[in-house]
Length: 124
Image (tube, rainbow, N blue to C red; front, side, top):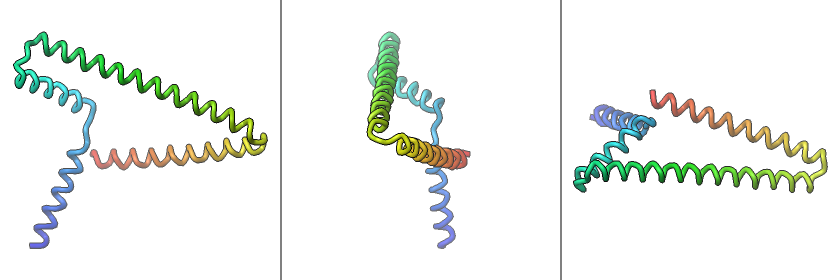
C-alpha cells in the first residue's frame, strides 16, 4: 500500500513539474485561445476582435518600450555610481574594486548558467 501511495505521489510531482514548462509558442497559443473565449462569451464581432488584438499588441509594445527605458535608466545610474566610486577610491583601490566586481559577475553568470541547465534538464 505504501509503495502505491509513493508511486502516485511521485507521478503527481512529475506531472506538475512538466506542467510548469511553457514556451513562447504555448504563450501565443494561450493568448489566441483567450481571445477566442472572449469572442464567444461576449459575442464579439470580427472587427471587435481585431481591435482588441491591436490594443493588446500596442500595450505590449508600450510595455517593452518602458522596460527598455528603465534599463537605460539603470545603466545610467550604474555609470554615475562608477564615476563616484572612482572619485572616492585611490587608483589601486579602484582597480581592486573592478576585479572584485568582475569576479562577482562571473560567479553570478555561472550560477545563472547552472540554473538554466537544470531547468533545461527538467523540461526534457
